[in-house]
Every structure is written in structure tokens, then in C-alpha cells.
Amino acid sequence: MKKIPLALFVLLLFFTVMQCGGKKKPPAPDTKNPKYYFPINPTYEWTYASLGLDCEVYDTFFVTATNKNVRYVDGVNQSGWDMVSLPSGDTSFMFQVADTIFYIKSIHSSRPDPYKLLVGPIEAGTFWKDRFSYDFDYIIIGFEDVYSSLAGVTYRGCVKVSRTSSDNDITKYFWWSPEYGRVKEVTYLSAQCQSGEELLSLDKTHVPP
Figure 1 (cartoon, rainbow, N blue to C red):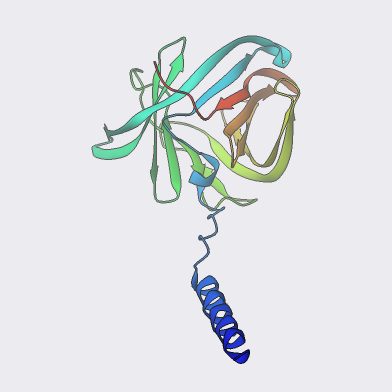
Figure 2: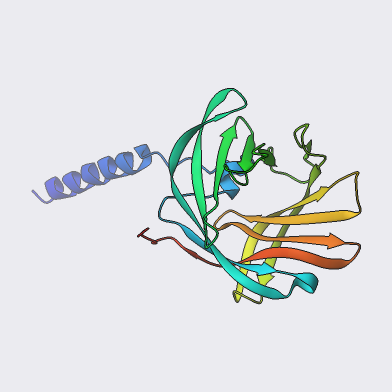
């Protein structure tokens, strides 16, 4: 009689192991896809510091991903996200086509041409030229941790992108975090900081008024 409980226990253990082994692990994130570095959700609100000469803070502003939308861009309907900046009230538009994230800085601008903001594969050495209406060359320099003294946070594993133009000696750097999105951008003329933006916080529970 004592062997029956033991047999049942062994059988139960076997089925438990089989069930656990049968559960599929969630797929690993595609870290080479640009959208991995542009997390977006309608409850997200980013707070940024505006930087002036020598990267001194002179103002703050907020960016909220308000809703998904379809906009007519270059003769094609593109599905993406409207993003509103406050206090300016400007609405930008982000959408992705294949391995490229495009960004329209202001949909009400007299020049609403989208930038090629990020292009995959996201790895050191990836190079792209912007659209014909912009004279910009981009290259992914690599990955690095970025410490923000303003936010008191270290953003881990950021993609660092350099943007240059044949028209001038200005270099612009962008840092993109998998968890926060764009955490910093700085424009340099020679070695002097001319302007920039730096993330102060990301509220993932924001409820629009």
C-alpha cells in the first residue's frame, strides 16, 4: 500500500515537469529594431530640460504621446503617434516604416518633411543619410551609459548617434535608452555646447487632462 502514494507522487512530478517545460518563454526583444529605443504609450509623459549655451538649463517642457493616428505623408497614409509638447502646444508625429523611424517635428510647420530619426540595425557603425530635403549624415557611434546630473539617474545601454552636415561644423549627438527613449541631445560647434535637451523624468502613469 505504501508504494501507491509514492507512484502517484512520481507521476504528479512528471506531469508538473512536462507542463513547466512546455511553457514557452516570451521572445527576447529585438534590440536591433529602432522601436526598442523609442518606447511609447499614451500614458507616458516625458519632462525635459532645455539647454542653452554651454548646456546651461534655461527652461523645461513636457512631451506626451497623446494617441495613435494615421497621417498623409508624401502621398501615403502612415500609422504612427501624435506627440504634443507643452507649453508650446506643438504636435509632432512619429511613425516607422521597415527599419526606419521617421519624425515630423511639427505637423503645422511650413516644412513638415519627416526626419530619418533612427535606422536599424541598431549597432555600432550603422550609417544613414537623411531625406533629400535635409543635408544630414547620421552614424551610430556605439552604446554607453549616460549619467544625468539633472535627473540624478544613470541611463543604461544608450545608443549614441552622431549627426553632421556638409554645410557647417555643427555636430549633434543623440542618446536613446531602451527604457526611456530619447534621454539627451546636444549640439556642439567645435567643442562648445550650443544647445540641447535632457530628460528629467518619465511618468509612465500620466493621465491626460
